[in-house]
Image 1: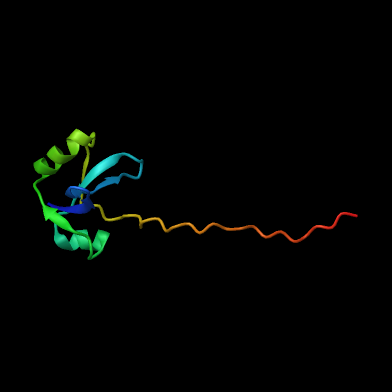
Image 2: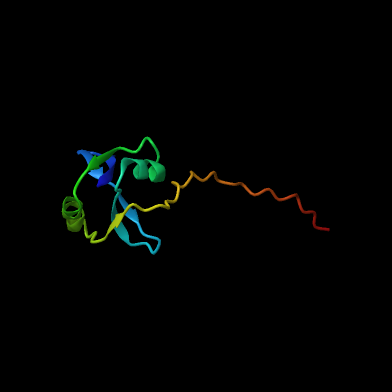
Length: 92
């Protein structure tokens, strides 16, 4: 499986994701093309077997492995604070 990585303080680590219901899951893709289609061409990855991915995720409390998810949500964009503008009110 092609497993997406994220940089960390001690090197790279397998990226963990959330299912639509909010549970944590490890993710692996069956081809590099599927990984790139879901996460973009800049995503770093490593090839691991499914048992190896489970062995990495289980100590973190992640017991689900999702294979080749097709739909992913984009990263949230930074929120720009909005200052409300109220017209001056005149009280007679």
